[in-house]
Image (tube, rainbow, N blue to C red; front, side, top):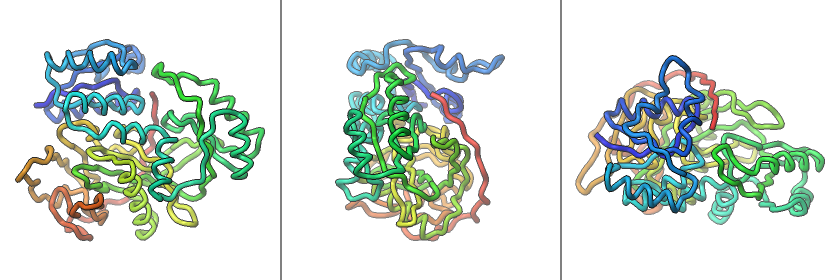
Length: 389
């Protein structure tokens, strides 16, 4: 039975699903938060909030990384943690740094930092040749207007460090651009009390349906769990209103989307992580939109993951084709037993993609070709999702 340190949590569905999943897996967790009432206000009486199932609930300032690291180090000496987790985007870089400091499993902190900052991500993927929209990082009004004049409307204005589509706006002219910029500038501190970067990302508008590629990475392998269709509404904002799995686009188009997502993950250096990569299927081919370590099951279908592999010592996810598959960290001479019925490389026929120099093969059964010998595919089903912070 493992003991996990949970540094903050998402508010809404994931704040209930993650504690439940930890308990069902036979593990326990300690919650570390700067404000427990941030979650309790969202509780639905008379049931107690699932976060209250924590073995310990401790309060400290989680936005001061240096002080937090020293505090967690002292806690680790007494309580003994096997992994550090969070289901809140704003704390994923902190969790990665804590895991590295304590010598616990997890992705490289610099990779998570880059994936959670849209401006850093764009720079890395451009250097790696991963397809994506033309863009500019702007620090003031003058830079914004110059970039817009160079790219031409319509464009998309984005904050570099928010999540869940907050303040992402389509702009069709200069007046709309300046209005969106003023609106964003009026939100200098995020919902967790962290001061935001004033830089904004201005991008060309990509047209076409949007899908997300859900992956589990470990040991240099990027395993594609599935591809999900999305519905988006609320223009000029981009609000996800529903998801459908599996995606209905032609297999060759989805294969291109998968290749683009894996190229993005590899360029960012993301490993030992569950990730969620958003792709626009444009007339000219898939265009990368966003790739981030996932806060599972919030903003993604619930099958995507039941606990974040990014920092857990055991990777656990639910296959959309039935059953759970748990794999411990790789050790010399160890191998996962064959189990085609629960292998995520099953009916979706997605071959495992690898980082350079890694041998392809399913991490569950070892198969490296497609189609996979598994059960018949399930029928698509729609899932409406909401998110909160």
